[in-house]
Image 1 (cartoon, rainbow, N blue to C red):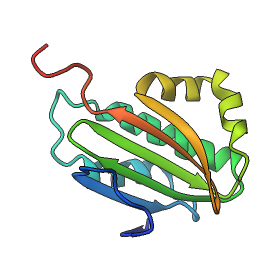
Image 2 (tube, rainbow, N blue to C red):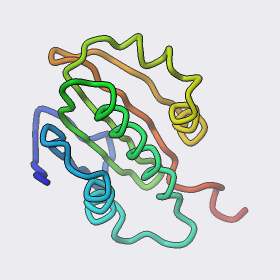
Image 3 (cartoon, helix red, strand yellow):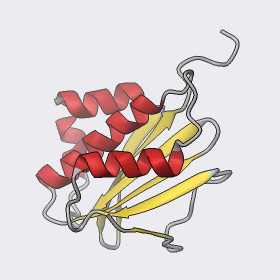
Image 4 (spheres, rainbow, N blue to C red):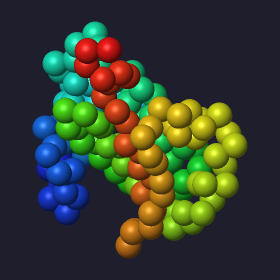
Length: 140
């Protein structure tokens, strides 16, 4: 899997870590998850909710593999509070993603995320999700 420092894609404000993966060769989802853990989550503690972020990565990348003809990039950025996951592909039809929210996978993305959505860009579309790092505020 190729990771790069693509400056055309800005890390989220206050980002502690940021990683971009080339999906054009359709790397195995296991490799994608392992790379995300290595790059963004090396200091995970038991209270962290990184499992949710990895489920979201699985779903968004898997959907790009299944439904888009040209998966392009996975970009994930981490702050102390959230993980922003963005998966881009060459299919410009953004409305179709919201239509399939009745499917379990995107319902799960919605339940695990603070917010998620779809936007178009000059190459196609980007499906994104903002996943909280912790299940409960510290001290609960």
